[in-house]
Length: 119
Image (tube, rainbow, N blue to C red; front, side, top):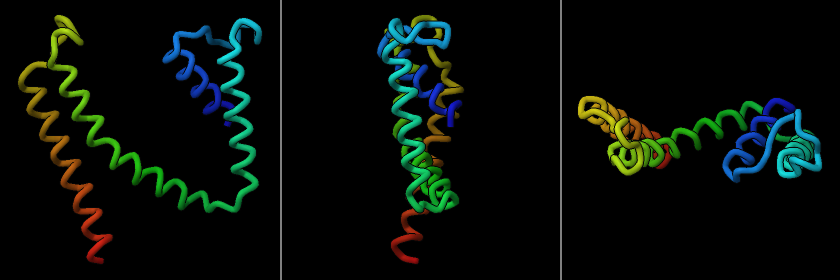
């Protein structure tokens, strides 16, 4: 858990533009150390709750698969706009491959939900 808490803290601070790092003193990086503390407390709390870890892994994978579709679409849209990526605009061939992968992911997500509904 400490590795995940640290990764979360770096992500939060990077997003908010706050100082981060273990080389910083707590007074300099309050958001960083606060995020680590909250993440560790949440993990300790989850340890006290009788959750089956295998089921938790399964459901996190399901959620990741469903969320991947709109994220892939947004990344493809943004990577084609020169205002977003400048000269590093996604080439046409990679755009087609990306959209094909996105459609495939969407079809798999629909198929998964279909099997749940119609057993």
